[in-house]
Each structure stands twice: as structure tokens, then as C-alpha cells.
Image (cartoon, rainbow, N blue to C red; front, side, top):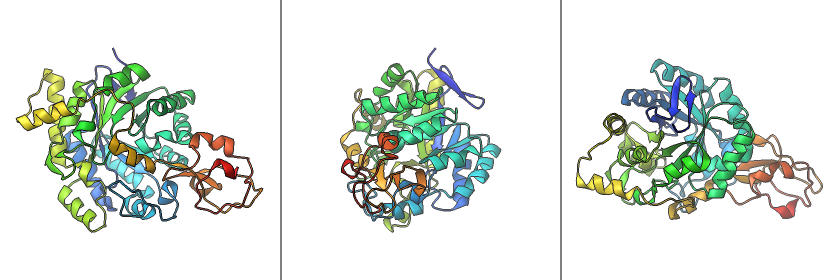
Length: 387
């Protein structure tokens, strides 16, 4: 039997049914009732869990007028983006009760160490590390020490980066670990899914394998022909034991918000409730019967497109997304000779923030306690010639 672990009373991996996660992300649009309804819709569709994202704008990026060129969010300043997209921290307890009342799990992706501390007061059943944060070794260390099951996504990573992440987690105490194959193109193309990587992940890293999916459309440039069930179902056929997808209530409404720069940031890769239910039902039918039929030739062709090859390098679309990974930044003015100190959420003068470009976070402990060789202004990427 392949590797397995438990999230509360639910076995994940092995011969257990696929564990299906509905990601709320920013699809609540700043409205608690919308978040509640998304969690209720996830439960009604048959998902096993809903998931939040836990951050503040200041833990994601500095207020330095940064943009992510080449991505679907290139027209908005990153700090403003995260101001609009964040899930307020005081919602977490109430949303946990919503999930419990509906019989599903609720956990979150923390984006820095202070978010981990916040989430631990609710005794979460697991943690998820987002693709962008897989390179944040300080965050990985913090989450690993909680002893909770951990699910990570490999979007944008090279083989060496995902190996470093898995080794960091295990070195610091993580025992129950899943790695989700993921394409962090937003939205991702069926042709870039490369689902043949899933069984290799299981064998290579000795983890529960899964799929975090950002495909929706057969035409991912013009957003035509939604086929939201195809990639997850093919992933399960390849051995995925966890499926994670984004969920919203009304894609058209979200698209209109996005057109007016008012929200809807995840609309091109988020499923509606009926699409989630169809996906869940088809996965359960496959688990029960060992076979499933697609409705038409277009879906069968799309399914074949998702198989691809074994791939441990970023695809073309993911290369643009990599700039949104964090690295080390100066977050407070530093005088020449002053000690550098890494700490999350502005508690020191060095922090891990988006976008990338500075020294890698794996060197945070090495940097702390060293002295600045010149005056450095807040908002500068940390480079070795400053140390």
C-alpha cells in the first residue's frame, strides 16, 4: 500500500478515496457571507475540506509600488492587490464553525510565521503551503515544528527546489507530508498540466501525491469551453490522492468585478459549485467503477492533453509567475554598521516579501547578526554587497 496519513479522522492516501479541497482564496470578495456560502457550497458538492489563505498585505509585500509584469495581475500594485484579496484574520474562528456545522474540514495556507501562530490557536487539522511559498524555508521550518500534516504544491519549482522543501520540512519534524503537482500558470493550460509527473512524485519523495489544479478552459487564452472536471479526474487516474481546486459562486460576477479592478482576481481558474459537484461525482464514480466516460469528443481530447510528460522544471507560463515568489528585502531604514535582523511582519529590518530578486530566504539565518556595509533604505532588495 502506498503512503498515507490522517487529517483528523480522515485517511488521506493509500486506498482511501481522494481527499478533495475547495480553495476559497480571495473569492469571498471581502464579504464574510460570501466566504460562508462558498464553504457551504463546497460541502454540498461533496468536498472533504475548504481552505483559506492567511496573510496581511504587509506580510506579502512592502508598500513599494511593485507589480508582477507578465501575469494576470500586472495592472494592479501588489500591496493594493493583497489589501483587496486578504481574508480578515478575525473571520477564521467563525468560518471554522461554518465548516464544522457542514461536516467538512477547514484549514489554511499561512504566508509567514505570524500567520502560523494565528492559525495554531484554532488547532487546524493540517497546513497547506502555497506554491509561491515553497521556497520560504523559514516558513517551512515553522510549519514543520507544529507536527501537523502538511500539504505543499510544487508549482514553478525545479527538482532541487522541491527537494529542498521536502528535506527542510522533514528535518524540522514533519512526518505526514503530501506533495501536489501543480502548474502555477493562471489560468493553466491543459497542455502544461503534465500529469505524468504525479506517480513520479510519489516514488521520488515518498509522499502522498496529489494535484492542485488551475485549469478550467480548453482555450485558456480566450477563456472558452470550460471543462473544469477533466484535469482533476485525469490526475486521480494517475494516482492523485488529493485534489485541490479554487471555488467561487458566480464566475460571471467575478469576471465583471475584475474588469472594473474591484476584485475577482481568481475568476479564470475557479470552479462554480455545479462544476465542483460534477468533478467530485466523476471522481467518486471512477473510484467505485474503475472507469468513467466523458460526455463528448472534445473532453476526451482535452483529457489526453493533460497527460504531458514528467516535468520538474517551470513551464513557460510559470516563468512569469516565479517573480511573485518571496525573497529577502530591507523593510526598515538601516545605517551603515547596523546589525541586520530577519523577522516576520516588520519585527526586524529584514523580511521575506514578494516579489523576488533579493537574497534567497535560505540565507536568512546567515544574514541575521551581520552588519550593513552602507546605509540602506526600506524597500531595497537585500543583496550580498550590502552585508
